[in-house]
Each structure stands twice: as structure tokens, then as C-alpha cells.
Length: 181
Ligand code: 5GP
Ligand code: MG
Ligand code: MG
Image (cartoon, rainbow, N blue to C red; front, top):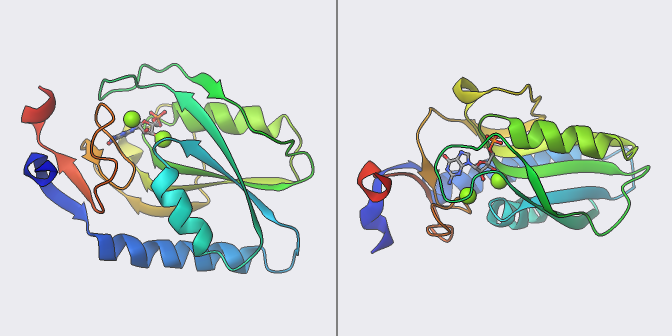
């Protein structure tokens, strides 16, 4: 069983659901005076699960797009390099963009992505992340909408993987060290 590999649960499915509803409501409130769609950019694959929950919690028109970036490979620590594997399908010029990410760790990925997308002249650009590990930050990142701050543990579930496994766990938990050491 997958749950045998989990040391402890950080956020239950219910806790996640409640926080995502709050984030969605906060976003809808912030954009309510502008009828234009919010262009939500999900960073695959990790943010896929959070993304689909979040957009359904936003009571405002939303457009979807996705990017694939890679910095981790199969290790549990970032290589510090960001590779763009799939770009956006559409132009974001003049649009309200929110980048949706599962977790911000060193900040390398998000710092790179925000700079790159800013250069395409969106009307506004914000960052929404479900989790953040501030103690690990190397590159500066301002998170506009954050689910939870977490300590420096390796987490899996709710989209987060270890070697492509555990993404479909409905909760977020700390992976036992014995699994990857
Ligand atoms: P950063 O560039 O901020 O160091 O790393 C961002 C990416 O690293 C995240 O989007 C995520 O894919 C991965 N990552 C960072 N911390 C964790 C973690 O605790 N667990 C998992 N599974 N992935 C993580
Ligand atoms: Mg990610
Ligand atoms: Mg990963």
C-alpha cells in the first residue's frame, strides 16, 4: 500500500479542500471588478491536482494553460537548473495571469518562470502556490496566494511525486526516508 511509505500526514484531504476553497474565494474577490478571464497557468505535472481543484473554487471566468518545466529529475533536491519542456499554447499579452504551482522550494523554478512570462507583457502576473518551504529559498519569490508554509521535509501526494509515484494520494504527507535512502 502507498500509505505504508508515509511517515506522517501533513494535510488531510479535508484540510486541503477547505484551504483551496478559501484561496479560490480570495482570488475571485481580487478580480471581481474586472470581467476579463483570469489566465491560469498550471505547472505540470506537480500542480495538476491543485490546479483542477483551484479553478473550480474560483467564481470568475478562467482560461487554462499549462507549462512543463523540469528541474528535479528523480532526485529529492533541485538541480538548480530549469528546463522548459512545454511552453504556453497562447499569448498572454494584456492578460491577467496567475501561475499555479504545487510547492515552492528553492524558488528557482518560479523566479525563472515569472521573469520569463513578465517579458511577454501580461496585464498582471501573480503566483499561487499550495505549499512553500521558506527555509529553503535561494531565489526571491513573492507568493500572492499561498496555501500553507511547510518545514523542510520531502512531501508527496496531492500532485507531488517521488519518481512519478504518490501523485494520486488524496492527502499530503512526509515520505519515509527509507523509501529514497
Ligand atoms: P524549486 O525550483 O522551488 O526548488 O522547486 C520547485 C519544484 O520542486 C516543485 O514544483 C516540485 O515539483 C519540486 N519539489 C520541491 N519540494 C518538493 C517536495 O517536498 N516534494 C516533492 N515531491 N517535490 C518537491
Ligand atoms: Mg511543481
Ligand atoms: Mg517531482
